[in-house]
Length: 141
Image (cartoon, rainbow, N blue to C red; front, side):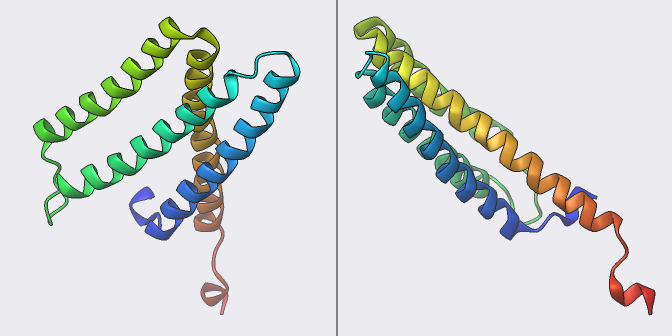
């Protein structure tokens, strides 16, 4: 059933995720500043930037390592995944060691992006499932 999921909806999910994560990140950064942790905001910006860049590189890697028949070349794709996630982890842990508020901002930015992506994807999948389950008007005639 999900093989019929429209590709343009995937781009809509990514766009909605980026906008939503930036909005939530701005709100959380404002709250952190009001609570006396202004250095959390630059970390949040770094975390959101890493998450968005990671997702864009993931998309291009998936396209690059997929054959025209739809098969995935697993070894190079796995190496790409390990490299991307390793960079995000090193940046987050490095900033946690160097400057805790900035490091926690990075971790929060990464987490907010992933949570927003999950919610956005679930909404799209539920909409798709509901649309696929209801008979179209042309079938009623």
